[in-house]
Length: 193
Image: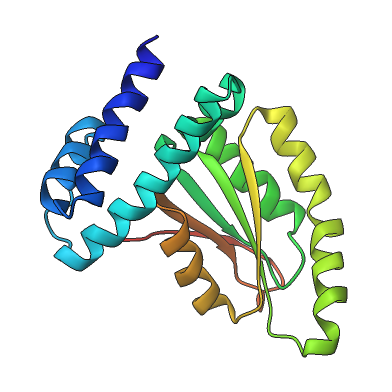
């Protein structure tokens, strides 16, 4: 019942936002989630609020429909911290996979795996198929490790793809990537701020 009470409180925040009272809605959301947004501009706060409210509305819809498992999963996705794991085009090396899974498990983080590449229009379907095939082992390993896993494919260069994913998935704290020019294929971790 606490879950439904929380959803009802967020529904109130949606009402504030729909009435144009963004500041009140933002304060409400920030107070409930414990997230401080002091340094963001008002426009960024509005965008984040709208995205957050959409996520909560999705959870409310699932809960009202009796799909409590999906509602809980949506709430977990909203609040869980994430590690963005950046593959090389459509592949993820075993070193990158093992390192990022170990890190996610130790820190109790979720993984968002990113496959990105700039390909011609006539090669997009092939690229997407390769990405989906190549991610299966990583996805299976995450499932066995108990790590929540999501896979995103972007038709863009890596830097722009990371920016897009960061805007879409809030709560990304770390990015794990490999130096693809180094034969040792070392993993590098950096924080997004």
